[in-house]
Image: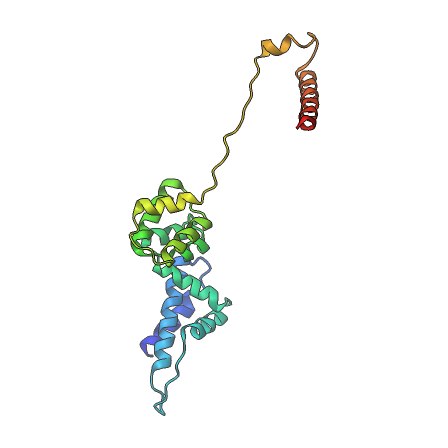
Amino acid sequence: MTDEEAVINMFDSNIQREELLPSEKAFAYKMKMDAMRRQAGRPKKDNSRQNVGQYETADIVGRINGESGRQVQRYIRLTELIPELLDMVDRKRLNFTIAVNISYIDKQVQQWLYEYIKDNGFIKPNQISALRKYVDQGETGMTQQLMISILNSVIPIKAPAKKVTINEYKLLKYFPADYTVKDMETVIISLLEKWKAEHEVSE
């Protein structure tokens, strides 16, 4: 048995485990694809070679294991993550799709992202999209502070909640003593509706 055949057989045995972590699946897929490409590149008895591309190999691996070639490639992208982020994927603290997008980013920036997620507890898809857009434009001089600024710039700012409190003593002087809280609320809402209608007409 060649080294490539041994790797492929080992993969086929291990991939059947139901409890495989995303990281284990990612490295298993990568090992099998690499082995298949090396095996395909070896000369045959007639000295011809079978060239198998990355996409074709991914389709073959996926078809055997009930997944699309694209999904196989997405798993393999996880092998480009720094260990800390990959561990977050395994512990379900980092979304799979977001992790795949992060895998295209420089390792130093990934380290800063890990610290950001650790401090904030989350990362949103649109934040990574904004960061990748900045990086893909060929911008240089990325710093941790700049990365944080890009991530924070796409977080919607919540309007401060409005709260009105009226002193009970002030309210009681406008209502009969036998009025319940519900009675008072009904009157207040009715008066506010009337005020709103008059205000809209005047505008």
